[in-house]
Image (cartoon, rainbow, N blue to C red; front, side, top):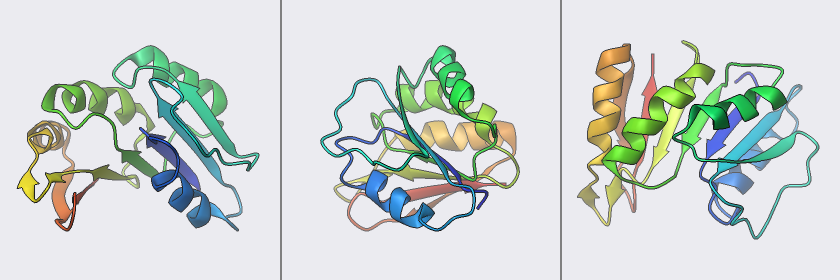
Length: 150
């Protein structure tokens, strides 16, 4: 990884945020930018390379706020765990593609909801097909995990 992780939808900060922080420990050039529509975080990282951007993940102006922080435009990992609905995902993906390169891996939480297929996957599949990405439901346990890459 290039050390830049873009996290969209951290919730209270006790899950993916902590895992990303742990994964970036010791990286020679870490950058972790977290985006959410409101600050719901109960736990916030103290690392100087972590930043919180408050804004609607469906709106391009939120991505502009991320660009202001990031000296590197392309993320190694984009992790999305926001509202798990088709329309939300359909609106988000074009906004965050600005930060993707052929080396970027996208992860999507909650591709399965209580073991059932989540229709947000349809928006991801459409986006992947239109933009030459490969999407797969990578893990089906609990809420599942989707992965998209070139």
